[in-house]
Structure formats: structure tokens, C-alpha cells
Image (tube, rainbow, N blue to C red; front, side, top):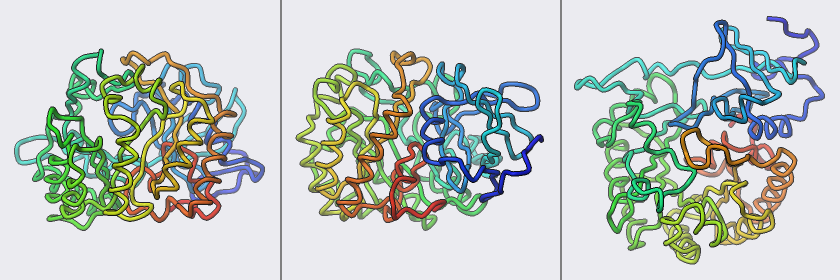
Length: 382
């Protein structure tokens, strides 16, 4: 590999001393990169049909799009050789990067012959991730579905199964901890046609996992009709709760996620308040996708509003997924994301919220955004 001698090694990655890590990673997440191995382009996505690959640069693991339309035109290219790759921009060497190996638990299967990788995936480098129910009542009809969602794609390609049982999840989670050292887990779900909106399924799943292995867990679902489900989730072994707004203005929500928009932002805010009482300040998070149409000022206002309530706003750049109605929707520019994330980081600092204090989940992982690297108190590589 033609690595320049003046690139120091930082946590296994060769990085020029002058490189702006946060800026470079933000640019990578916005523009994506072309991934090339010894035999050409490899289709290697992240957890689910996210079209991302985990890379590690200067002690930070981030998910970078490699299979999107934008990534195919990106000025960035990664040329892999073994467990490392040269990251180049328009042919010029930027840095040497590493990437997590294929998890060892992927080699196993259940007694029924279901491969473990169809039940759960490794996200980033140390996160157990699974979609417990791979169907959603909203996805079946594009008039109600979120226009950026690809929950059904994995089923069509047979890369997962429709419903993961508590026993299956417990078995795979225990193996992931034992063989690959995963440190926390994420349980998300498609929304079923029930008033609890998936909370019951998540309770069963969490209880199954925590009965087999000590693994901090985040559960993710829409606000249930009865907020008493928050206590049930906590009692089942869930450490943190994610309720994802995605878009922060009612107009944008109604346009691109009409079914989910039936649950108003006001309802989310009420749910946040009750959830924080149950899980604690900083242990409730919401995922916000920048670039769907919300003005930057609106995202900052919402980030401030939820942070004041003790909810961590995990703001990430929108990345279109092939096969969805939004597959050609543009990603936000690197400059816009840097400015936005700097503003969110200031809000988090004022509210006393830190990603490293979150017990489990997306905010703790931080790989889908460079927000974590902007937190003054964040521990790089944690």
C-alpha cells in the first residue's frame, strides 16, 4: 500500500496532523465514498439496507454511504487492502483508514438453520442492532409510508426474517457479546397495527435478551397510546428509549411521512416528558434527519426544545436509500451540516447532555453523525 511516510498512526489509522477530523468525516457522510477492494467495487452495506459501511479514522467509527447514487459520484474513494484502506479525494491521499472485520457471530446459525446475521447485525464496531418486526403498518401503502424508509427491502432480498423471537435475539446477542465484544444494543421495530405501536414486542425482546446476557439496550418505537408502556419497557430491561421525530415541522412531516405525522409533534413532546421521568434525563433520544426539507433554524429550535426537556437530539444527515421514493433526494451539503451540528453541540453543552452518558443506542454510538466529535466533553473512540 502506498501510504505516505508522514502520516502518523492514530488508533490504527494513518492521519495527517493537519487534517480536520470532524470536518472530513462530515464531508464523507454527506458525499459518501466509492469503495474498491482488490477485485473492484464491493457491495458492503451497514446494518439493514442503509447502504453504509463502517470506517474508523483517528479513533472514531463512522458510517459512510457507499451504495447511494451520490456515493457513486463522490470525490472520495477508498482502496482496500486487507484490513486497511487508502482514503483518497480526487486521487490525492487523505488518510489511511481501517474498518471493522466481519463479525464472528455471523458465522453461526440457530438450530432451525437461520443464520445469525439474518437476526441481528453489527452496527459501527460494537453495537448489536436488530429490527424485531420487519413489517410496518405504514410501509404497506406508499400513501402513508415514510418516503425515505426501506424496511421492506431486506425481506424482499431475504437478508432478514420478518419477526425475530425473544429466544433468537437472546441467543444471537449472547454470541455477539462473547465473540465480538459488543457493548450495547439497539432494538427497533416496524410499527404494528396495535395501539402500543410496537412497545409490547420490544418488551418481550428486551426481556429475552437481558435474561441471557448483560447488555445495555435501547428500544425504539413511536409514542404508544398509553405512556404506561414506558414503565413496562424499563422493567423489561430497556435502558434508554428512542422516539424518532425524523422531521421537525408538521408541514414536512405531513408531506414525506403522512402516516407517522398523524402522531403530532405535541404528542411526541408529551411522550418525551413522561419518558424522561421513567428513564432519566439524557436517557431518552430522538433521531432528526437533516435535509428532508426542514429549515436549519427549525431543527435548532427543536433541538433546543427537546434538550431542555432532557432528551438528546441526535441530528444526522439524510442519506437516500436506493429503491425508495426519496432515492434521488439530495443530501445536505457538508458546509450546512457542519454549521448545523456546531449549533446542536452548543445546545447540548448548555443543557448538560453528553453522548457518553447515554447507556445505549444511536446517540451513544454516534456513528451516523459527527455530532459526537463536536461535543467538547466527548471521549474520542468511546
